[in-house]
Image (cartoon, rainbow, N blue to C red; front, side, top):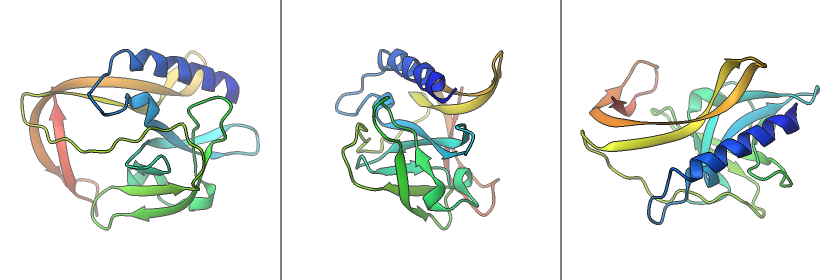
Length: 171
């Protein structure tokens, strides 16, 4: 099952690469992955999306995705079939924002990190790429998704205490 999932995931990433091209920034399939905890039955517990930022060994994710886990249990899904999954060595969480930095052991890496943060204004079109769990004909599966919309408003999100952070509402 693990191998079949990897094949489905990689075919989805190939489709997404055709949609994105943003100057010097990498296409999201080379920066984006997901966090999981391996289980003894050769399956995984999916925790959430992440992306490489500034270094191929540093990943950003939402802190609530990894809450109550130890860093040594966490892995980042490898982008290529032959590469080992990234073992997380250290986790740093932000005290007020729903943000966690995951640091893996330096090694050869197929990840091409994002290197800048762009500001957006209402009326601009934006794209997002990540992973989620969904019910399918084959049961609950981790699926990749690309969604886009137009920025409707910028706001401060304070619902998930103790975190607050700037957010974007899309059309």
